[in-house]
Length: 299
Image 1: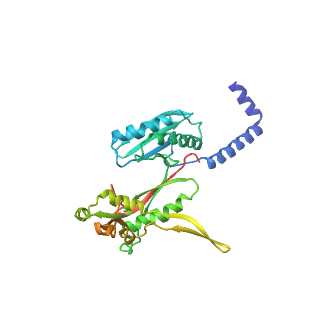
Image 2 (image 1 turned 30 degrees about the horizontal axis):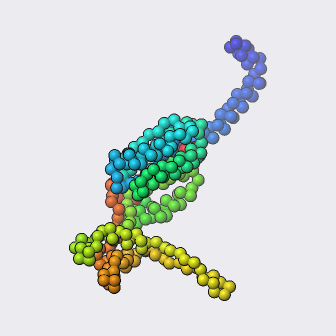
């Protein structure tokens, strides 16, 4: 067989030359279409279910959240295996599918079955959500948000994190092929209500009363409408707080049915930041904010 191929090649040099040129052209075209990555994503086809429950310990997370999610999603067609991780305040369930399964079809099937899982999870313990359409190896690039030299005093860690979360992240999420942008570093801005126990006791109130009043007075409400000639006026109330003064003006309870006790009467209000579990540094420039941009490996 090999001798016949060699003899044919010697007798038909033109045909073999044309074939070699076509092979070289096809190879060059294939190289331009080949996806090349510095860190190739070799992760299998998977769907991640994330549930946050800050008030539960690891055993309760496993019993009340992880197990119902696993049972509800166990019979999805195409599943290869299920892996779960339960720790304090967090449940992670990884559902692995075979390579022939479309990832978006798998996410739809898992999402439909999570409705059954939510019925089995006690109220207030957690709401299972699907993770982004990416994996741990789907990283595109990392970047840092830092002020230019000379502007360090203008932008603190709160401002850098605000720029990252509200400007840069939103624009990057609209880029084709980007599945998620995970923010790191900086300080996440938040309103802090520091309750004074002595003031609270003097008004015969509890922390639960403060919590309920904050929850009930931070929402908008809508009513009906009023017809005025050819126009229709819609009735609505705006109750969302937008400043520390708005929070301080919320009524906790009325003493003797007349004197209102406000939030600022029993608590100190200030702008703060969420609890930090780490920091992001840029060379020797100190702390900065930034993110890791991840893409969908199947696009």
